Length: 433
Image (cartoon, rainbow, N blue to C red; front, side, top):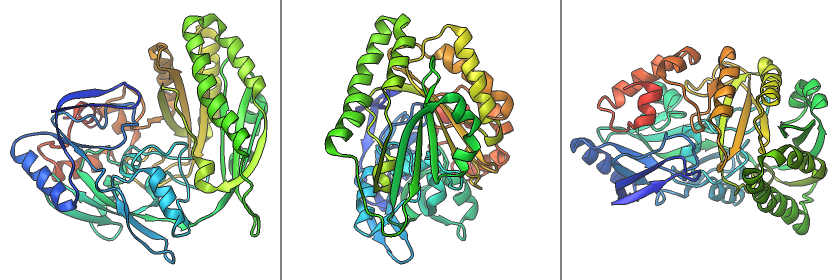
């Protein structure tokens, strides 16, 4: 028997039977055996979700033996890989075929199946989340059947399974539509928050990838613009020393120390944030896309993120800022704002609408409930949809109102897993028993 714990320390499970299958046949046999014994089974990835979406109750399946690229076509860009493949390993592997993912989030610690199942996304007004890059998947269902799913085969399952929160079965392999490898020019600079908000739509639409981080209690936002370079432009990466200072020393080690100071002396948070915002400096570099997209993040925190219709994001940020100012809360972590294009995946947070994401964070040793509850109340009137892997308190009735295809998803679940072999407390809350 074993114990499991997620990265953030928000969820854990003990007394687990652990399985490490090395083929789809072994996965199918394990699922069928668990179902016949009346056991609940959950496949787990890297444990980077803050919610209980991947918490195993009885049988835990690790897919680390299904963690490699099995085929790649450099002409079509179609790449098939095991569902347990980590994003860092995938990105490095794709370079061997001169390919890349069109868009990524800002960390690469997750497995590919975990990332798509929770709706992980990056930023880009014309680009969707990671799940939109999936063109096929292999799914083991509760009776041990293996379904091949795509837009042309088992299309309803495909629409449901790309973002499924693990509630339909165990994904064993995925086929990605990748693009030729490309370089990005990264331009990072602090700007007055008012200027960023006034020019937000121009910044979001005028760059391939745009996001900003606002430091509460300050008037400064760090902006990040990433754009494909012109033909013939080569890489000019951040120097080793500058990269270590910016990305390891300041973003991780010093940030950890300032957060610990915030715990002991909360009255200093405003001053710390103002000093941090003034310490930000502009930088520009060109590097492989995945090296620009992904950063190292080692400071442990809690996070809540909601997707709102893009037209309403500025109002959300203004209301959130006003609440922080009047609440007396001290928030040492920045607030992150990103964008994405509408898509057609049933449980995608960007289903049917151009979307903006607002993510709030709190250091793990500081209380977060009051802050996160206020955030949920602010975004609720805008029909906001929570990231499936980040902290929220919504249940099935509320989510049904926000997802037009919610009941279609439940119908697929009822068909594939009528006895809820893949259920856990989180899925029972968000999808109903």
